[in-house]
Length: 404
Ligand SMILES: Nc1ncnc2c1ncn2[C@@H]1O[C@@H]2COP(=O)(O)O[C@H]2[C@H]1O
Image (cartoon, rainbow, N blue to C red; front, side, top):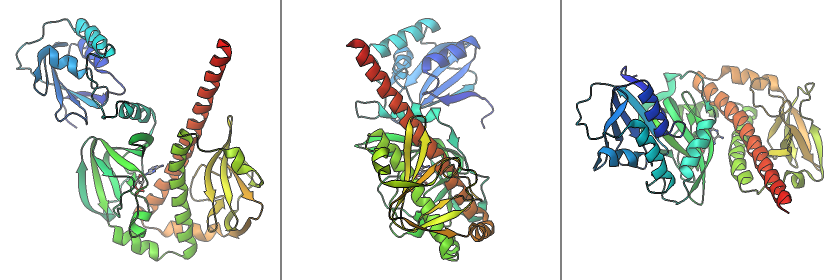
């Protein structure tokens, strides 16, 4: 890390007004650099003893440049302590600048820099994702890293709907995973060091289609994994273990889709549960068995204070039950299983799966563990988005009642 850099972060978290105030109260001298993926160049503000003395944004200089930077409501910032040689072009007081900048922004007199959709969805996205925890993976095992690639803030690493067979591990940095509906990004999850970009299907299927878009947040360094070696390791596994991994991968894909479907109000869990029977009841600690669906279908459902929330559908070949070597946060502790009336299931030996899991290479095991963590976190995100949507609906209907 740059030793002179004393403050850095996200503009979605600290606004420019907050940062100027902070640097003012600490009497700092140095350069504030702002980075926004929708601006071709960074913006700069020069401070002497806590007071902005000059700024630069493209062709703009001085106070005009500084005010224009209030429109950068997303992106990142870095402050480095250093001697300032710039001319003093700004004489207005610090507080005066903050108040005026915020007023101009509120009055719509400063252009907000973001995506060209009118609706500032990326700012919302960044704000939403910056509130969620970053899912990190285990320590990186370099044995399978064959190359390194750098991505810069806002660059797309993979794009939803496009073909791709690479899988990467994040060596350093943060990546947002988003789904795009009518060009509007729906935030899914934010992942960091040790997490993988590219699902297992990337190195297993010819012509795998990316399930989401991955966007670099700030500078990101990725390690390209040896897909061929991973595919060979997979091919040497037993059919049961391969089927188990494929089913795990399907759970993750479905959960990601579920966030979008709930967002669009497309899912009605009650209807899905009609004519089904409970096979595993949530929180049943005595359930220790692992099963496979042989016929019919089942649903993984979390019982929440807002009612049942559908997490995944299960079909022939999918597993359910207690997985002793992975924490998925689903059944039996974190979800129930409902089966269709015609369902047929069989028991699977979790012990033999566990033995195979223990023999996996470190990288392969890390991929599986990371997938389990993503499944667990995404399920929580699905439920919290349903709960907050339901409470919003309640507030609106209460407001309506109060008005009538
Ligand atoms: N719910 C999720 N949690 C973590 N990563 C995800 C999630 N959904 C999609 N991704 C990642 O985004 C990637 C998009 O391309 P892939 O489908 O190859 O692989 C996907 C995963 O690596």
